[in-house]
Image (cartoon, rainbow, N blue to C red):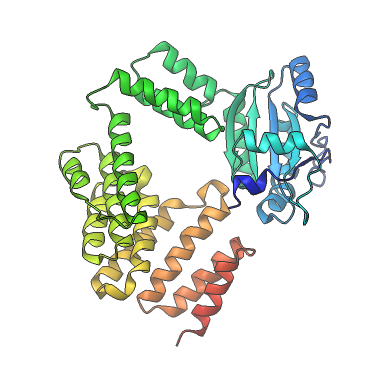
Length: 376
């Protein structure tokens, strides 16, 4: 992932049309020139939402997006309902920018990975964001969701306006504001939750408490101060919400991993795995398995086998990750490592090959495949 500071160094509007799939009989995607101001003028006149695509030269996922999603017939038809602007955030060797406006937009929306799509209402108000590569079917689903007003910024604002006591909706709104580059709005929503629930009984308040304890523990490690996990352990002993308990035990496990404490890590991860909700089990299993890989030299065969089981289940639950090949590759990378540390080199190599196939431009994967092949 490239840093925001780097992304903001250079950008240019590229009004290049995309050719639809062969024989589709559908017009090209029209990428508008003239910047955001012109896009708003066109969108107001047509009543269409605005789609900003942030990409960069040398980004393999951007190339795949252009080669696969933007030429698929149904996606091209859907984008006929949008006013589309392509923004190139490529940084040249001298740091020269082609468009200051595009660079400012990348900074405004906190673009942190490529490709990133930002959806705006016809008047230019931010509405939603989609970060990362998606295959055509998943991309079509996201575009239709946003245009239909499902889970968008304005939809969450409407939920909060209808019921100010709905703290979970407000917390979701805070996260949406943050994802759209509005940290001040994020802070405002959290402050409202704190005022309404000073005793910290709501799920968002308890989630924020876990985040605060996490920051305190990692802050201690960064400052070479003693880490005290007891407050989080005590907090989790009374926590009955599965998602919060899973999150808290996961935090504690990762802290123990950073401290080089295999016993504490294993115990915490087993607790997280026991309570992981169905919709969080894949992410939990992948994170668990990776931490075990990092401390593999200190673990016994039973613990290594447990990590492999969790990783296999995580990959199965993930499926095709809604077309996000980068995410799928990351899970397969973890699985390959688990195979290797359990003495199954052939399966490790086979799995790593699939990982590289999905993400051929990721040097870490290519290097790991070579290392696994060289294992004796």
